[in-house]
Length: 365
Image 1 (cartoon, one colour):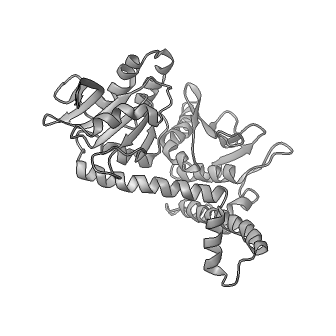
Image 2: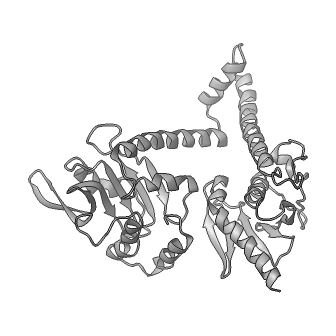
Image 3: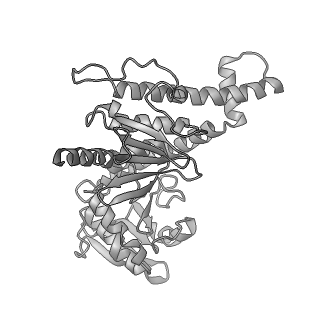
C-alpha cells in the first residue's frame, strides 16, 4: 500500500490547497502514518502534541509521538508543505530526542521525510539523516526501508542496523557520484598509483585526470550495457531479440538499435539511450521490445509503441538542469522528477500500464 499510485495521487492533488502547518498534518502526515499501520485516532498509538519536559522547561511539545507499550518509539516534527527542511528546522527534535526513549526522529513537510537516529553519539540525535525520501518520487528500493517504520515490522534493533548501513551507503554513493562527475585530485592520485609505479609528474597527473574520468564513465556504461543486454535476452523460447547485439559501449548503441532521430541536429545523449534501454527492459515481458521505439526531438526524447505518436509510453526530459520523465495515463501526461536513471525502475508499473492501455484500445477497436 505504501507505493500505491492511487493513494499518492490523491494526496498530490491536495497540496495546492494546503495553506497551514496544521493542514499539512491533517492532509499528508496523518494519512501517511495511517498507511504505515498506526491508528492516528488512537492516543495509545499516536500522540499529538506529545509533551516533553526538558529541565526546568515544562510542557514542551512535539507534533507527534508514535507510542508502543506506553513509550515513544518515533518522534515526528512537522513543517508546512513546501518548506525547506534544514538542520535549523530540527532544533526541537534535537532538544526532545535525548529526554525520551525514542531512537528514531522524523522531520517532515508532509512530502519530504528525513529520518534521524543517534549513530554518532549515544542519546544525541545525529545532525545528518540516515535516510531521506520523497513521498511522491521515491525509488522502489526505498520501499523495503520505509516498511521498517510500519507498525507490523518496527523493531528498534533492525531499524538501527538498517540506519547504520543506509547512512554510510548514502555517503559512499554521494562520493561516487561526485567522482563520476568530476574526479578529485586525491581520487585520481589514488587510482593512478594502483596502475602506475613511476613518479606522477604534473604532466602525467593532467593526462591521468582525463583518462580516469573517461575510464570511470566507460566502465559504468559497459556495466549498464551488459545488464540491459542480459535483461533483453528472450527467455520465453521464441528466440533472441537483442541477444545478438554486439557488446558495445552505451554511447555507441544509438547507431546499433532501431533508434533514429527524426530531426536534423538532434544529439541523442548517452543518458537518453540508457533510459530507452531501461524502458525496453521493463517492457520485455509485456510486448516484443522491437515494438518499443525511441523518437528523439529537440525538447525531449519520446518513447513510443509501434513508432506511433498516438501511442506514447513516456518522454525523457534529460537536456535541462533538472531531469524528469513524462508518464502517461488515461487522463494525460504527468511530470515526475528523477535523480538518476535507476528511478525509471520505480516507474515500471506505470510504464507497463501505458502500453497495456494502448493494447486494450486496439482489441476494443
